[in-house]
Image 1 (cartoon, helix red, strand yellow):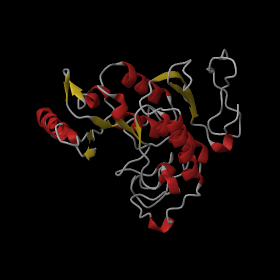
Image 2: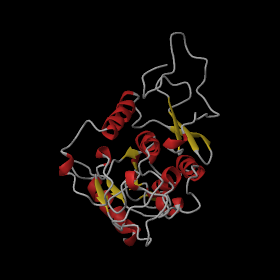
Image 3: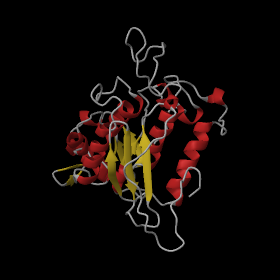
Image 4: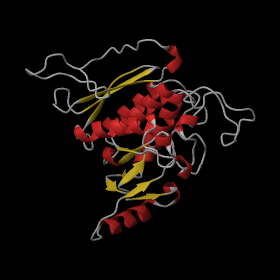
Length: 276
């Protein structure tokens, strides 16, 4: 597929015509549109409008904007400040995307915590640097900066939510600089970020999550729980995330849990530790 920049600045009929042409190629090509908005109905209209297919897929900016603010307290997203440190907004938007029927194919929505025009996830601060310029070399504080717990939770959402996960900007290296070069990291595969993403990708592959259904189970200001697959499916994956600071050092309790009545010989396992 190819990413189409600034899709809203082109008429629907033109976008539809281009996608139809690419569908007829010997090797069909899907267009993934960039529509930077939190308005889900407007966003979805570029995948289908009035029952007619437009583009094959979309960069999932509505969820990114709620996830940046929700997991990291990022103050520069369009959803800020109402969604800062509040995962309810991400959960509600996710539920609407999954259940409204506005999208023709939720599996072709690209999920990400950062993008080519934004700050890397490990540098998403809560407290802006002096001057207020989001692209200033000066660093803010708080949020996901120096907080491995918040970064891990946000990447868990990216990798396991329904849609196509996107890792941008050297996140696997722990990069914190806007539009930074990456060769100096020497393609290091030993960083905790790389190993964590590798583990999540293994879960996604082993549990066949690429085209698996999803359901929102619970949300609060500091927690977001969703499930991939049906409740009793052998490949069901329950995903527990939160936005609590690593420095809090407290046990996190969730009010929802997988069903305890399992077939003989079956157990639930923690996919990150491979332990029951």
